[in-house]
Image (cartoon, rainbow, N blue to C red; front, side, top):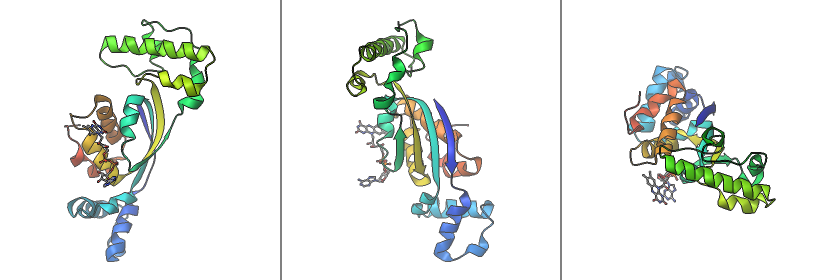
Length: 207
Ligand SMILES: Cc1cc2nc3c(=O)[nH]c(=O)nc-3n(C[C@H](O)[C@H](O)[C@H](O)COP(=O)(O)OP(=O)(O)OC[C@H]3O[C@@H](n4cnc5c(N)ncnc54)[C@H](O)[C@@H]3O)c2cc1C
């Protein structure tokens, strides 16, 4: 998977939102150490967590499976715009037939696991889908035989409070392996000066 952080809110916006409550703007150090400590104290320790909603992150996430997508979509406090199979399945039409040996070529379309047999069956499903597309059946019907391993991509916007919840639930060892990888990758792609707000929510030790 590939993650790109497209946009984020500077910490000063959240610090100012907090300082609105006390009208203590004169104590700000413009998003520096004092403001950072304030955000952690109020947002995390005092549990005035709605203040963290002023921090918003927009990620471009590529190369995840539709199996992961349906879990990601359960996180209601986030906004998604997803590559549509209805409009893009034609990408398969010009491909030569796939055999189970075509791992590299199929990897453009499929997320593979560490189970060879699962991967081979995914490639077979991909070839079935290709044949359906070549036969001229519409995308709206063809998409019903997509394998869950089919790759997708999306723009995902989430605020810091909801991202803390996401990282806490999905970095845990009980989460699906691929969404766990995503949770850690999202953490890695956060701006360095924001990471401290999320570190305590990681459920695995992560450098
Ligand atoms: C290990 C694991 C296994 C799972 N297994 C399954 C499964 O088998 N089947 C399945 O269907 N789902 C499963 N889920 C998904 C899970 O039930 C949640 O839908 C998902 O994790 C999103 O969490 P959330 O509701 O906290 O996040 P969000 O939807 O982003 O909500 C964020 C927070 O907002 C608040 N909130 C949101 N909506 C409401 C509401 N309607 N009422 C009150 N408060 C609200 C809650 O505090 C919530 O924590 C699993 C999740 C995990 C981590």
